[in-house]
Length: 326
Image (cartoon, rainbow, N blue to C red; front, side, top):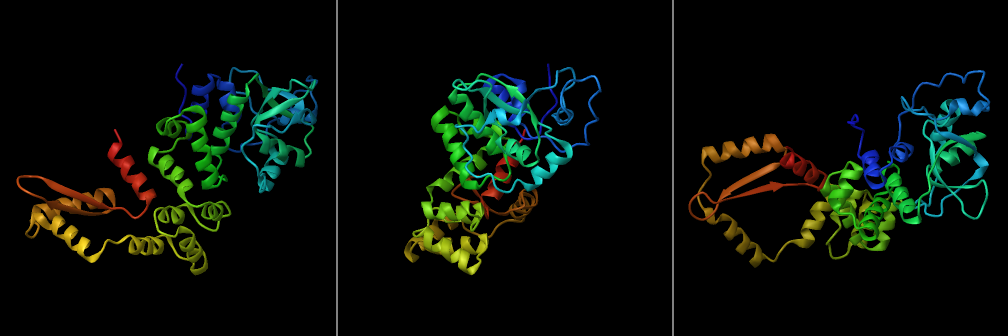
């Protein structure tokens, strides 16, 4: 059966990985909705059950378990759960609109390990809920870690470095390609590749990104410069923008004057001023791509060189999307 498209690629990615739509639904974020109506009087469940996740049409609602029977997951890739105050307030008002994905603990009766949804569980504790909706599955350690990675990578509060490390683990531990990760996460392949490149930076610079002192855009401009840590510290102390860093990084990478002269001569081998048709074509391309464009004839016949001036990798993502769109 065909399903309506979902925002981003997380649900489809997990369904592809595990073949379980309920699992995908348990970890795919949902938008806040109006409060649920109270449960019918005939139900034997406690009052908290009326505030559990909304069941999909034609499906039974998820099970509920006492919140004390759930334990943090040992395969959880996230180490920080700060900043959940807004989620706590949402849970107080609406209850949990998503079930928590759990698996039975082998060495403890009536206890379950959280695979996805630990932030929701912690928020439910602070909101003083007694019961929470769950989806129970028997999942091995490898799939548990993989689900945790994909769920956390989708979250907007994950740092670029954590995101990069998550992508790297999916590649190294589970043999996913960048294209597969891009489809799962609803990202472009260049975004995945450029995010992973942040791990080429020295550890101190990565920590500056993790702590929010540097943005991902600032950090990417430091890849390949002679002393990225010194440049990063300068960026923080002088409040340099991405464009400032690009200019400084370009100065450190400039070729020698002799090499520059040779390059300039080679680039201008087409000779002569540009025709009106060439300038008109450049203008059309600039309007279509939103970039500075240079079209130069080279050699004999119709051989040409098209140069696009791209400011940062986000612009590169946009260009790639436009050029590969079908």
